[in-house]
Length: 102
Image (cartoon, rainbow, N blue to C red; front, side):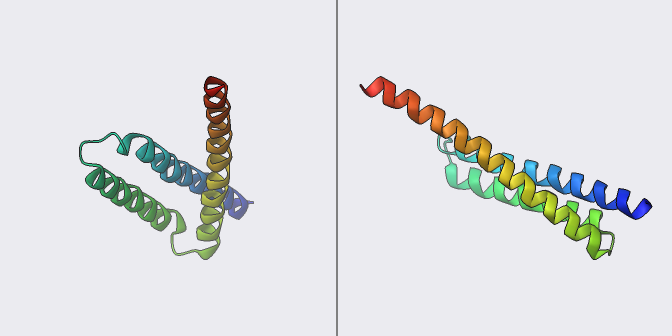
């Protein structure tokens, strides 16, 4: 039972890390294009997001590959969820723009 709870916690924490990483990527792309120094903005964002996620995986795993695998699964689940959200919002924006063009 304790191992199940550890794996569930690792899955949840991996999902949070994925939401941070991919949500941060989405935010960076939206804000970075209007930045005065976009290259520095994108590079800084990449370094911060990667550092946070790598440290998070290291702390979650605790030298147990089961917890690492669970956290990676949560990370991928977050990617899928954010991708769907961004795609649906892009479709809505495209429809709005198409309505204005006519």
